[in-house]
Image (cartoon, rainbow, N blue to C red; front, side, top):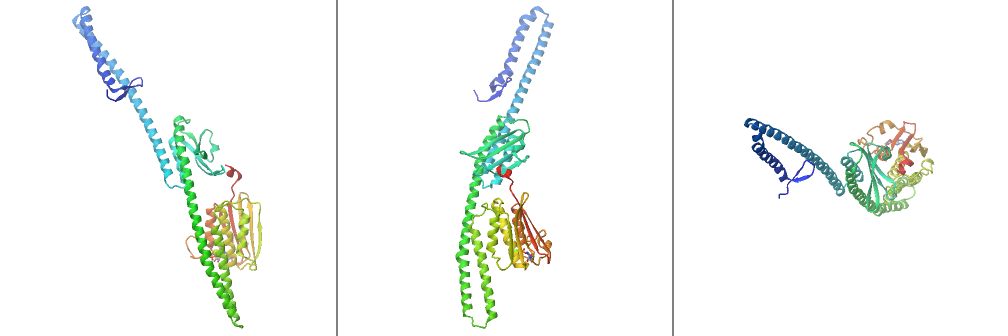
Length: 434
Ligand SMILES: Nc1ncnc2c1ncn2[C@@H]1O[C@H](COP(=O)(O)OP(=O)(O)O)[C@@H](O)[C@H]1O
Ligand SMILES: [Mg+2]
């Protein structure tokens, strides 16, 4: 027997040979029976003509009935083949999605990309109209939430929640909702489960990659800080010593020259202080949450404003720790704004305020100095287009603020002092918990 199969009228599967038998056996048998009936029965009771007529009529009815029967069987078989084909196509789609999930694991993708891809695949293989994927950090808090069609998983009335597990650890959750063709069935569930297993590995993979990159950055920062410390700083120190020797050797009465030399020594001192601060920055771990008031205080102290301008600070000590990127932006803006005051403002007083405004953190640095045409300096493209190649401070402040999700405003006019305002969004308690 050959291994070919065909679909029978009752939905079962029969060897292809039986279909062949079905097409030839019954008609043959029918013909034999009909001929015998004509010979033995019809001819005996009816006239010759009537007997022939009767036989032909019976043959026609038989062929018609059998033909109808066969065509019905074929139609049913066709329907079944079609549904099997659809199922195969569906399985193919799922396999394709799983294959892509597998690729996502082995490619060097960021966590963000992995999450978007996993969610798209989840929607595609289950026919869900909306969904979300969340990943947890080590403390079990939601670290990142990506959604499609809904703002939070709690919004969907009926949904399907799948844990992303890596070993014993719960890495995250995949939520799917609003399936086109109705509720989620076992097939969707099984596909989504397979996907979630791949997704968990992909998330872990992206995390490890992130950590490796971070370690490389830290190492590079450390190397830079050592170069600055052991090379540039020692060099500057030696120059200062030589300048001070020269000062000591100056004959009495060279007042003007002495003043110029002292000015140079002071400038080198300031440069040294700046480099020391950079060295410290490079050694501190970037991205660690810090209390904002403390960050501002450190920056103010490092600038050494004493004697150069009168400083007033109002820092709300109750403010919650800021995530690393926001803290970095805050530090940068304080540093640059105060440096600008020292360098350009010729101010008598400067005021630094840090407070909470509704859902935002507000930093304000204001001085009573000469001011400038702020609209021109911080309009669109300032510090971006490179107009005034060396003046990047204002543009950089704004870029840092925007990268941290906030905004920066500079208010100034000639003779009217300057106000730099930084706004950073504060995480709401709810957003932190989820
Ligand atoms: N507090 C301030 N008081 C007066 N002028 C300022 C102040 N801050 C900035 N400016 C003006 O804006 C210009 C651009 O500042 P910035 O982008 O920080 O570049 P830089 O400090 O390198 O000059 C400065 O050159 C200065 O003219
Ligand atoms: Mg500047």
